Length: 387
Ligand SMILES: Cc1ncc(C[n+]2csc(CCOP(=O)(O)OP(=O)(O)O)c2C)c(N)n1
Ligand SMILES: [Mg+2]
Image (cartoon, rainbow, N blue to C red; front, side, top):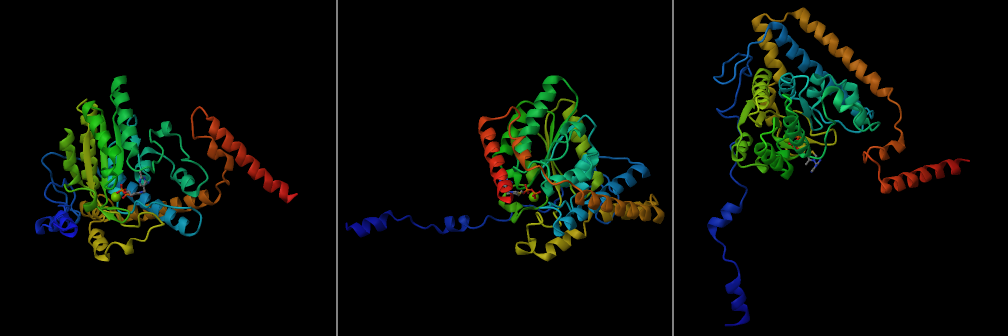
């Protein structure tokens, strides 16, 4: 046998089966499906669900509507401020108001929240002043709020890591014998991070009182959900030994009911739940992103028809739970909020450049001290030149 023919014999044979399997996998069943918990249809019609019921007064319904409208207004203002050069970056929550307000309003004061960087609606529910969120995006502080004042942790940019923080915190809550619950927010993209799998394992094994609230907004920057999972995300929980539920993330009533139930379960000591809020990111990933490069206009348009705010407005109007005067007053309140946010951002003080060294370690570090001294000398050199 010649050298060539040996090499030819060793060459891997191409199997036609294998070739087709190596292609892009068949589309994962990502459409909302019959398993979706819904209490308010996109047309604003109230429907019942056998496992989740909710009975809200007109006042409470108006409250949820107000939360969503003001959150959207704040978000639009922040996007505009970034475009005007007042913020370095903004991550819009447009389209995800119901998921955030529904879950945020399910929380008790003593529950603890671990957000990502997009949870402006949850921050609103926790009573964090919206202008506080903007300092970080303007680069003048490192978070700008005390997590323990509102039980709302600082925004976390390292994808998925907050699910581990939440799990550890929840294990602590259980050891303290407290009856509060913990909620961790994360995205569809984060679901494929190792940290999230570890958080699921530890929380299940230790029966930690934590709710994993995944906002499946269909995209992780330019990567669609099909690139993160072969099964609907809520089904992942089963493999870890705890329940998962998919809720219509654009239905504020269903998000409230499902999250309430999951938090109650955690408080009863029955362990974690995964809630997958099936929703859509209507805007860009951040103001640095251009979604027209990777997704079709028709997709956005199909989700516009499921808008979380419009469907509740239709319901309020049909039920006679809110009149024109109410909507007009809310428009005025939105404008006032927009103005307050604008003015607050423009009057934020310049950042203290040295402060970047202050929060790297709670107890300090020799290396950071050295870097601080180098940077101080570097800054001083400009002052010298100016003399
Ligand atoms: C560990 C880590 N890897 C990568 C990134 C860069 N990154 C920032 S946002 C993002 C996508 C996150 O998508 P998803 O979890 O679906 O959240 P969404 O932005 O859609 O709310 C990535 C990959 C990061 N911040 N952290
Ligand atoms: Mg996403």
